[in-house]
Every structure is written in C-alpha cells, then in structure tokens.
Image (tube, rainbow, N blue to C red):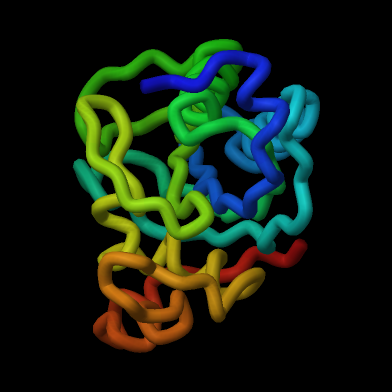
Length: 176
C-alpha cells in the first residue's frame, strides 16, 4: 500500500541506483539533461554519477550504439514514487515507448533500492535483468563495486566479473 505524503517525509533517506541510457539524438546531452531533471525532483539528491559508456544495442542491430551511465541517489521517496518520477522525466524528455529494446531518446531504470526486493506490475526490484548486462554493471561497479544484489547475494563487482569476457569488453568508457 503506497505511503501518503506525510509518511514519506518521515522515511529515512535511502541509497538507490538508476541506470541511464540513450541512443537517439544527442545521447550524452539527453543523459546530462535527465540527471539535471532528476536532481531537481524534491527528495532526490544526486550523490555520484559514473562516466558515460558506449556500447552496442541489446535489441535490433540496425540502431545506433547506446550511451549508458549509472547514478547513485539519496532519496526519501518510496520505490513506486521514484519509479513514477523516472517515468515523468522520460516523458518530459520526449520518450515514447515502442519496440522492446528498440532505439530511444532516454531510458531510466531503477536498478537497486536500498536492498528492497519486490515484484509488481510496473516495478521489479532489483531490476530483473541488471545482472546480465555489462552496460549496467560496468558503470555501476565504477561508482559502487560493493553494492549488493539482495536476490543473487553478490556484489556488483562480482556480478560484473561473472559475465563473459566478450560482454565485458563490448562496453567502452567514453573520454569524460
């Protein structure tokens, strides 16, 4: 059951990790704009942001490569509220949901939320595919190698090391 506004402000701040990705338009600018808009959300504070990583698309091959990053936030928002804020930022930046794994102007995924394990119609925590994706694990390991996956009971660094070498090598840090 969702908490009301009074209860939310009483929650202690928690640490969360959000994956960011884009491959249409100017992906770096879109990630920077998404971070700025998330920083402007009440009860959300940006703590760390990984470098940007360039990687091939997961879906249809005839699309541009992606730029991905991971950000660490401190928030008092409950998971569903944060998820709604992420979706609102996507919409405000022009995201239209279409083909699964298709090209996109921006993609924001709630990866980890303070050790919470949950599964709902819109939100599953931890993100159900993060442990299979080097483009998520590499930037996450850069800023939080000891972050804990509460279902798999491994650190992010261990999950990244578990991926095949070809997957890890397909993800490249950008210059800045």
